[in-house]
Picture (cartoon, rainbow, N blue to C red):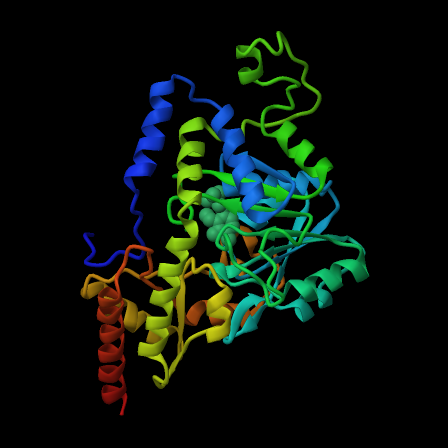
Amino acid sequence: MSWTLPLTDLELSEEDVAAYIGVLESGWLTMGPRTREFERAFAERFGVAHAVALSSGTASLHLALLAASIGEGDDVLVPAMTFVAGAAAVRYCGARPVLVESLGPEDLNLDPVDAERRITPSTRAILATHWLGYACDLAALERLCLEHDLVLIEDCAQSVTARDGGGRLTGTVGAAGCFSFFSKKQLAVGEGGMILTSEEAIAEKARSLRSHAMTSMTWDRHRGHAESYDIVDVGFNFRMDEPRAALGLSRLSRVDADIARRRKLVHRYREQLRDLPDLIIPWSDEDVERSSHFGFAILLANEAARAALVSELTGSGIQTTHYPSLTALTAYRDQPPCPRTEELAGRHLLLPLASNYTEREVDLVATEVKRIMATSAAHAG
Ligand SMILES: Cc1ncc(COP(=O)(O)O)c(C=O)c1O
């Protein structure tokens, strides 16, 4: 399918391309000095002591959970409205994800009250996703963690640079913040991830496990800093490589400008689609200022209304997407239902958004949405 307007787009600058090619020309491709530089710059940008670069966001969730000693017999609260990676990472550790409801149409993030209801003596952690770039109620989750002795891990795959109601950067509040640099994310390098943490022990464990728990790295041996190595645990190959680290470093310098452009487009969507009957736009204008805008969501009256809109938009070459509630997935059918999330999952729709899209393109989508909804209202009437 060739779209007039795909769901998202990625535009690399000349500096990005030069940074990437520069690494190819250097002759050193596996994890080394540029990865360390990317980690240093990322940690500094967020004002956190440690950043550990990894091969994906999923790897960052997996290692953050292992580093927090989550394992067999443990339950971890995970929102039902998220991408499956977090729940899968809990299962990689031998622990059990326990799915939690979304708040509602005004805020699709996980509901701290429902989370508390699902706490049992086996609950050890909350893995909170900042959905679509909007921060969860971190203050409420911190309180829950304190009261019930739980570890808070933040899934920031969609929320790089987003802030919560108290102005705190997502990923800097919990024991660890887990980021993704997947192609469709705001800070994209293709595949990649990062753990942010102020806890030395978590950083150390993640650094060790990302490279087979080896006591020295190939780069150290290349520089003559080590001759051999020991293996002190069962680790993984979750290393980031140098071209992607160089690309990440280059893109990090522009991430605020890219997100400011996304925010402008989200404001435009909201102006255009505000007050339409049978259409809700989650979150408030104030939330928009704090979000980092992975996606722009609307909620339709029901699943049939969404299907009709998707079909017409597809016909006009406009790509959209929506996520299932995890409770609807075959591999998660053993979970207690989350009816509120299932209902919201059936009604929401993400419209195209990218930092290089223009207000004209947003207007085109909004005009189509309004035309299609007016036509179906006329038919229904
Ligand atoms: C909320 C969320 N968590 C985790 C991930 C996993 O990240 P990655 O694809 O880099 O493994 C993604 C995206 O893919 C995501 O959207």
